[in-house]
Image 1 (cartoon, rainbow over the protein chains, first blue to last red):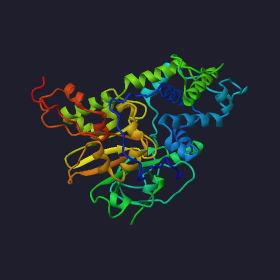
Image 2: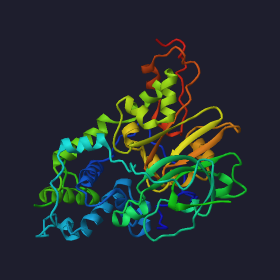
Image 3: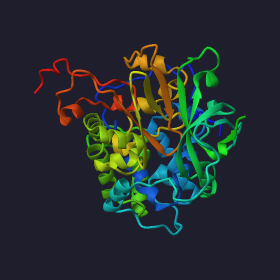
Amino acid sequence: MNGVHDMGGIQNMGPVEVEDNEPVFHAEWERRVFAINMATGPLGLWNLDMKRQATERMSPPGRYLNAPYYERWLESFIGLFKEHGILSEDELSCGEVRIKSLPELPPAVSPQQAIAAMQRGNPAHLDEAVAPKFSVGERIRTKNINPPTHTRLPRYARDKQGVIDRDHGVFIFPDTHSQNWDKKPQHVYAVRFTMRELWGEDASARDTVMIDLWDDYMQAEA
Amino acid sequence: MSTHQHDHNGSELGPIELRVRALESLLIEKQLVDPQTLNALVDYFENKVGPRNGAQVVARAWVDPEYKQRLLENGTSAIAELGFTGFQAEDMVVVENTKDVHNVVVCTLCSCYPWAVLGLPPAWYKSNAYRARIVIEPRAVLKEFGLELEGETDVRVWDSTSEVRYLVLPQRPAGTEGMSEVELASMVTRNAMVGTARVRAPTDAEDSP
């Protein structure tokens, strides 16, 4: 989706403000939103790509731009809970349970299970034998795609020429995984783009941007 | 169950605090979350993981050339040698800063960051300004961080669009030859491992114990 979350290259965003001795969280509500997100992810109702799509669809777009970071998380999983018939806005306003029949749900994650899941991780890397479409050193051109759904090909890198720098192996494809859980296994590569290819003749002649891209985002360049 | 309109000090809560409190109590009542799990997760990310993990990786690479080689060839397994594994660091790539190349990491689409190695990202890393600008004017952004790069140094910006997570191996500062691995680790900052700073030697590095 061509949303405001796809920020690479936007100008006039102001200075990067750096806070000295920054705490991990700035308020108690941030702690709770973070932890609720991490504790409900393993319930398996949605995947990370669906969660990212829900964040990107925060509406109106100005709300995404202005929201504190954890408010974006909060509204994305509230939206997903609503889609699954688990929560309603009415309940959030009054603080009382109103939905009488919940769908069948897995049990809440215990503290031990939650910490073990953090230590174990949740790899998107797949042990599947899928042939790579490209090889290191090969020149590629990214496709010009504008799906109305989740994608990880940023707008600033569409229809651009690059060079395959390294092959990371086989991963879940977020464009399909975010829609219907289809993993569509394929290779991901770090692809090297010159600043001039991305931003034109006035850009630095020596600097580069490396972008991780999936097979489906690219075609061979003569 | 009713929502609480006041916190423990009796001061007024804003709309977002009220919304989060209502959400938490609803999810607990629906048995979707265990409040002890929420506390354990907060404790884990406030106290158990953080940039000290990554700093140990960097210091080890500075003192052990064979470790450094393994780290650059397979970041995930070399980092796991020091016991750091897990969520948002399942597939790690380590990129080395040298006098010729300066690497810096961003996630323009959201805020991907190597949690198990650096902890949760700082606000600046998640900010609209950093995500928007570092890929189009990296030298200007780095200058705002106090990092001025020589004209002959190439800047390489890594946009973490996939589930691969990046860690920058900063240059070891001059004058630190006699320092122990523990002393070296104490100098390595989070920003140096994202690529928005250099590691600075203490001015009295020669004399430090």
